[in-house]
Length: 195
Image (cartoon, rainbow, N blue to C red):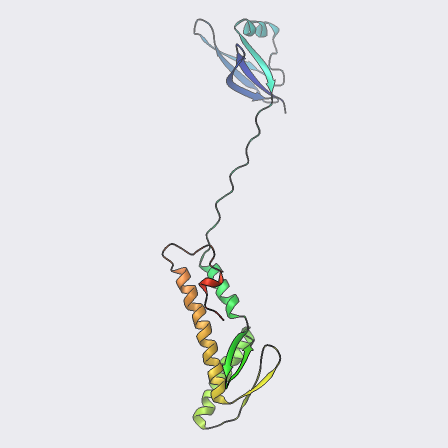
């Protein structure tokens, strides 16, 4: 789209318009009288007599290329909220969790079903311990290896898992309650307990 501007003695007056839009040019005569002259932007000088009078006063209309409009500034980043911290906590809690029982170290799956099974098995292990029942539990590790755990051993594994997950919940709470707000790098390992 062609752009025009009104000049006075070769200097822009600040009045600019684009073709296709009706405009009114305001100018001041030598005696101080202010005049308003409407022009169709598609032909900014429709009347030759008006054109001549304007030129005699030192006015002219010229086509020009306006400077490019800079893009709007990017919005500031949205600070992380509690939901983001909770999602990171849950992601970490769902990762296989290493435990050590009777000198054997292995990792237990921690997806939803596996955690529910471990909770149920811990209740059953507690019942067996109280009843003097030493029937072992067969536990499959995250790598597919099967381990036989006595009820006390299963309770030990469950206690280690609980302590690790509890640490994640405490870390998440500390991030949500940070006095300066949740840090942007809340997902960095330095904010969370080691597995």
